[in-house]
Length: 152
Image (cartoon, rainbow, N blue to C red):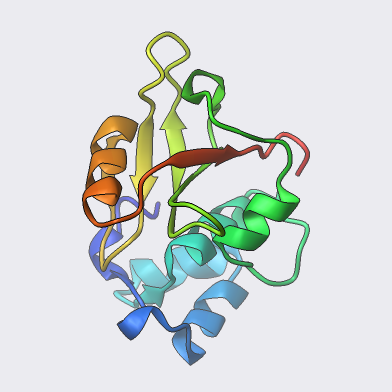
């Protein structure tokens, strides 16, 4: 659903969450579907988008979306072998508390280059881990860790 309406997905100006982000986060899946079907727009940063997707399928146990650092701290274990990343796992790019998160759409247990869905700008991208990792490294955020969703 979100991919089909990717042109209606906004990204918070200056990467600062605001009231539109809060309103989007509060929507249930059916409400989001109705909003987008009628031409409405939703706004998330990357981590809130990932959390909302988990929430929409009943897997997010928290009342707020968190951020990359809180995901790294609570979605344990965190691992680095991309061959282990299953559908819905979050790839967090950058050192420390992280800089950007994207969801695994198609695992690649053989080569470790899964297909990711990334909302790091208005719209959405689908690209291989290798491409997003190279882009993040080029902008000063090298490295990737994965957050498991197995315990959600």
